[in-house]
Image (tube, rainbow, N blue to C red; front, side, top):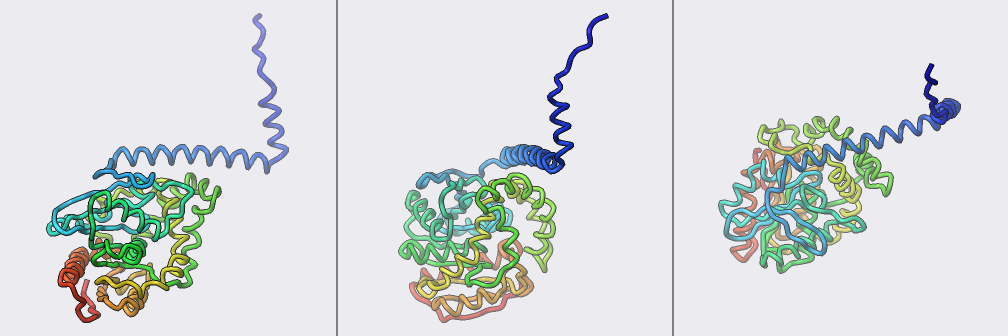
Length: 345
């Protein structure tokens, strides 16, 4: 009779040891689960990138690979998307196509979003991104441009006008956050930005939670209006990649501190500026824009009744009118009287 195969007793001893130490067993199980989750999230991110290849071209600036889309001819117009989104937000809104009928439109994926890189070990605040885009525009031989920034990027647009005054001829600032306020709602979204721990969370838990929270977040951002059908073209899975969630967390963590620093400089903005905000914005109070209008001497304020935060999506025509307005004031070489207008969205 053939001898029975002998199995190593090590797995048995290890299992016995884990049974005697439930805390260790739990830690081992949790570590394994997190590792498996990270692998799945990485695969989903690669799949999203394959299914949503770059729409435009790349330019390298100081070691940063920036993705951008260029459309149309005429006076240059730079479009900068908000936190957590990418070029497809501006594309699906039809704003790029509308603007390209009269302008040379350059829409960037900001660092860490879409297909643009976000090198570690650097601070990517409004000033740093303003300098980066200025260098990119120099490489494109663009001397002066109208700049539109939505939400978080409104601060970048303002920084460009302050730091590179000769390069910015007019500003359009939409749904921006400009002055520091008490924002406890930013605490949880900022956690993935914590060194080391944040990387673990971004690669494991954050994509799962983000998928669960996405519908509710969209209702908050678009409300009181419904999410428009055209937004279905936005690649959600690209926004849920660990790398992009980490970039979003960094910008959420910077939101109040950057407002503290920048709020002291807005009065120095001299270029024609059109400020827009939804009256019913559930993310950033319309009073932020009202207050900015009081500070920037050469500015106009457009309050959009019935609109929320995502006015580039729900009110693209009004945003386009604001671009034309800012460009017209700049071309006229002067500043028309300051005014406030409430527009029905």
